[in-house]
Image (cartoon, helix red, strand yellow):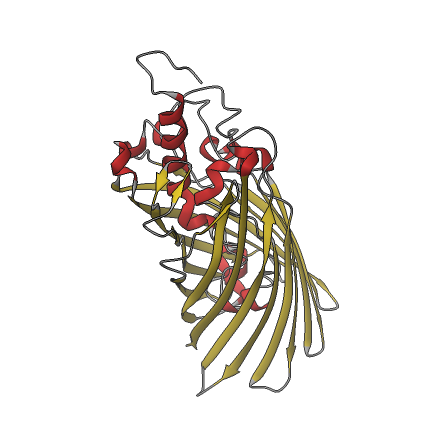
Length: 402
């Protein structure tokens, strides 16, 4: 990195990049695949996140808007309670990134209205983002007591229509808001406080029924272009830009009597967002805030989601699933990951729904994201930084059909 008099020193650049990039992602990076959770909607969560070809509630529009024409008139309200175990090892010292806060609440809402037998409009609202909270006394490579939180709310307003008895298509306008709060770097003369940004994108989908209980689905979500965060324009790559990456996938579901099997494949293009995909401190080609400034070195990711549901009775349905993503973190870029230790990528899930009074139901899901560690490689500081993450998710939702 340049060290001329009109630019930050190497040490200041290093710490500034850590704070800006790491803190801005810390909340969402505690999700199960980068900034994404393992699934949307409690029923899908119980099946490992599978849902591209299997719409089950009003949150389906957040995965595949075409599925909203399958769920009927309904309202779903829920929340996920996320307990994290994350942190880092810098040199020979281990630091607990959930020392001061380890439990987060993430809301979700889904609503759908059938316009006629062949079309529907819906709204699917999901929340992403939690945070990282080291002890106030921690000193990690010159960063003292770092704390950060990123809150994201993503809403998909969708329209779905059946083309015929077998096929349906859907389109959604995606609106997003994210709020970033940073505390801790003020002692180094670096920014702390709060900033927010807004953005929009589109989500498209298709579902098809092939007969014999077999269904297919495909979905695409464009990159959500977020407005720049002026508070961090000299720190985040591309002058404060932090977009939500494009993603696409396909799924299959097979209903056999009272049992349904579902499999999804999802591809997430993390590397297209420079604040995420640019190389880390030791490899970046530009100063913080520039187009080539340091990032996380996140790799594009492939995710497999497999689930099963079985209707035990007319009232009770049980679910289970498994979710597996390819490695996201590059071990050569570990230092920035102190505040975004997304090492976990394997998840086992369980779930259930129980019908209550007529037209109402209660659904629950549990997900265990197994604790994993990524060991730093290469020169310091990246090479002496190990990152770890594990999670417990408990989600509850109340659904009403009308």
